Length: 242
Image 1 (cartoon, rainbow, N blue to C red):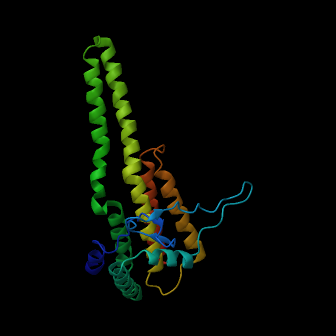
Image 2: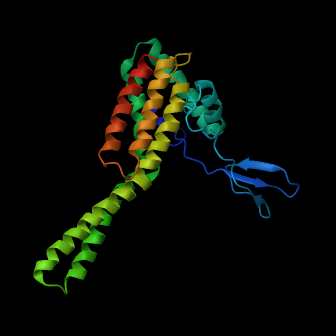
Image 3: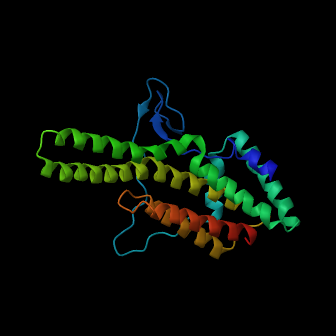
């Protein structure tokens, strides 16, 4: 477990990268994760494939296609960390060590949720509530006593609503992105030496989609943590029995 915990500190986490589409002075197109050089011509990214009305949405990418995409964004240090982790999982699997397999899942999920200082975003709802509450109190100072309580209460409710928008936009959405990217990488490094069964792949894809839906600002704030718990449970089961 010590080896697994050490691997998760920095190298494992995949951060969402901004993609730049640009042309150089010779007109050659480029797609990079770093800003283009001075003088480059920025171009719009190609639109995603359209889904025609009346036709079903395309199925999720195969594990092989996702493997190519995920591995392409890893640095050399991250690739080495994932290779070491896979060897660690393979050893645990050969010893029928379910506890280590589940501990690896917990560690990676926790780092995806809170690594990189994301824990600090949890203060935003309290800040929003305090700010709007103080604003309502200040505006109510010049009103009659009977109008003060409804005004302050309305601003407190507004602070709660604004706090939920901040929480979903700046915490839940980044967490959902990081969880999906790192869990998809874990799918590729289970230590079993084979791909996940199709039903397990589909099961996890449904979890990723549910997680992204729960990160919407209009969803109740408790729905996202519930989906994280469901993903944690399913990921452990899949990793133990891929």
